[in-house]
Length: 146
Image (cartoon, rainbow, N blue to C red; front, side, top):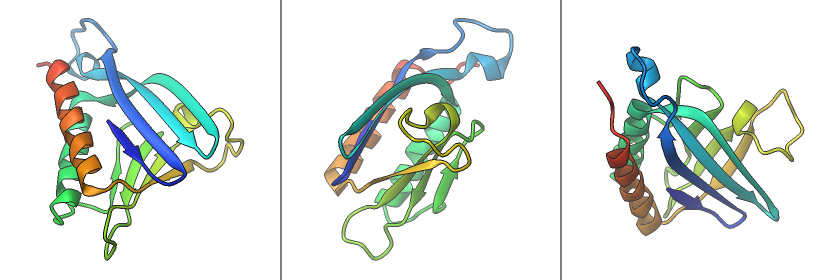
């Protein structure tokens, strides 16, 4: 999934399940996520177990709600608080998202340990729809495991 803006880009890719098998439902559904960010001329890539399968479903549903002008919530947060999304698109012709990157998701060049870094992206409708479709395809390869 890729979202861009004039000064930034954000890519999220599911690499694999964190655990190949576990007796615990929660552990079976944690995903290894690759994040690639660009802000101005700075780039950063990291891999960590940041989201679960059902949180990917939440992200897809949240983005769909924004795209359909029926926003579920202006913010989306997850169990691991190092990644989050906010929508400030109201009244704009396109979309305006803030992506919170904190702790293990924060870029290595960002130096304030007390505040998360917020990356601003502004995808157009086509890019948002492509991001949603891409994320659905990735979830299809790594579905919720019972």
